[in-house]
Length: 159
Ligand code: THU
Image (cartoon, rainbow, N blue to C red; front, side, top):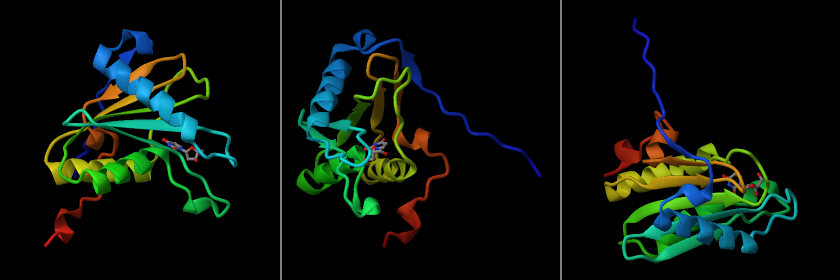
């Protein structure tokens, strides 16, 4: 028997203003994306902005539904939109934010992590995750897989 551990490394910034200009722009796009959130049940608006390798930014916001599980997080709205509309472009980075004033950024749910991890596998390259709070700190993870150690890999199912 042996005991093993997995660590998650990330950068922490005190505020959005401390980010590199390109990352700041992506956070601003995520803030704008929040305007289209449809969150009448939670009142918790989330925005995501996904940067592709040709400079396109695909945005998403959370879309809720009276049949609760039918809704979708902002991240998956953006990733599925990019996957379906720009299947051949590489995904470089995604910024995720909420208007809710919290000292630390929100962090994607398990299902969104699984989706992001698989797009990394599909494109054979990592996707930077920028988690920005409203008025608080920012965290940057260099690859989505770092957020979901031991994620389920579709490799075994691919023919
Ligand atoms: N939500 C997101 O869109 N992304 C996250 O990372 C966390 C949660 C949404 C789902 C739901 O519409 C609302 O926030 C409250 O959970």
